[in-house]
Length: 233
Image (tube, rainbow, N blue to C red; front, top):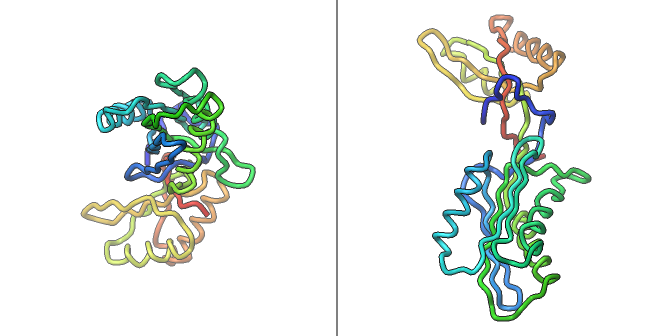
């Protein structure tokens, strides 16, 4: 999760991204050419370029390392590279496969994603149309299998409670459907962190539920906003 900088809030309140963790890889063969696609979650251009550098080293004998990436809640950063393929036959089809990807019916909001397609030429020319289809399909077929999550901008509220009751209350809150954003400890109390939709009625409802669960002994303290990964429904 990452905290939002003051004055830098996005217009978006949610979007879809690859799950954090290991890269996802998939290979496609077209007329003896190998297209190895690697998808990585990244939240900045440096991360995307680092992926390209790593794959150039790993697949140093490949002819092309074509790239596309989309970054930011509003998808404000979009880049692509053909890396020596005929202009417009690799990077742009890859980028379009990312930005046109439906993450729900009628929803195209995939971001914080970098895709690199490593190509080993198989000796048969594919032509411009064939290259466009191959690079587009390489990214699309990889996304078919890649784990995705929803990134939601949520208000983080803290609830200090006695150490002896923290575990039970956390379980009760999870059972009630609340997203837990972590747990902190100090000598006097355990601080449960709850991620709530940033709307007054949602926070008021959570405060009322908390009071009911603790007989009024716990208080909800409103904090800042963060982007939180939530499983796709």
